[in-house]
Length: 172
Image (cartoon, rainbow, N blue to C red):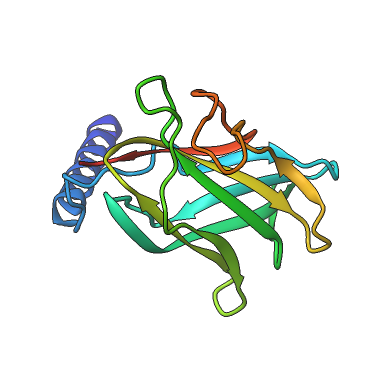
């Protein structure tokens, strides 16, 4: 009898969860980020996590994209304030030439909500890589690396990316 009650409870939970998914406002034509966060080690011997907050990318100018940057110590997270985050969105691969786009604005810390806000411009649908360089509040690089490009040119190593990068699939 206990087993039957447990099975019924599980079935009810699954049915309720499915109804919630169906009622959500998620647009099937709008894809989510492939990975919504990345953990990385800083040059300051600290562990960090950079995460998207409620982000659904689309082809065009994505304004007010929110990120959270935290230090991770054991099982606790601490919000990192006033760091400098440089962002370089690119479409990697032989056919795309690791090209970037215009209109991007680096994430800036917002004291009101404790998040970093950015603008990301995707000039076309497809797989994009958001490359990051993270600097502390003394302007010292703690993580990330530049994409190998000739300065002032679109000539790049077609598969080059930062050591701190998030992959995004942008719908057409």
